[in-house]
Image (cartoon, rainbow, N blue to C red; front, side, top):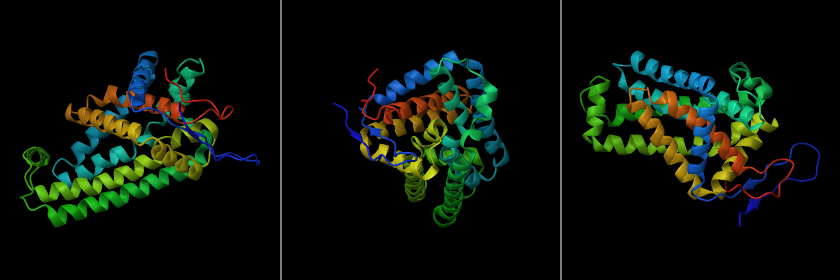
Length: 270
């Protein structure tokens, strides 16, 4: 039996979303539905996938001989992912409503709730800048090897050289990633779907994480693994994997938040 959090009131104005409890296997179903959306909307979905891949390649090319910047920018790729995937959320929403998948409306979807999406983007941007600065400080304090190019740096990581640096870098990075993940699991889809304000959307996202720690751990692990596969495949994997993750994130929102018209409905199990 699924359980819910319902903190909405009868007062006028937007009510706090009802957060539902899902099982730990739900993320696998979200990925399956994401693959279904990609198959149903291949051209617009792959357009966004190519954009993700192009961004990854650009970062690598520009900072090829300054790997400390590449590491920060690549990590920031994950931090800014929820904002960059808005068009994929809209494509899933179009299909859900029985409409044809259209790229142009997906590109302009941010206009639906521009003010609050802008606030959320600023929050993510600030976190990204703080992380980028923290990344450089960690390199300065803990990285003791000779400064190689990017490929040499990756070889050192694989060989577990400079273990103290690795522990500190990934520990601090994990902290930033957890903050962003908690605030963004369902926040952008919620703002797009219901014109919800940014603060309420982020609080609802944190509530979803608190209510479903097992499912969210599985979901975060899937996102990280698929993203790593995308980068390790010379960014080509991002063309397909990022659209799947983006579409799946929309279905995660649908499972985790009860419909506005029916706050008593249980979480879907399909």
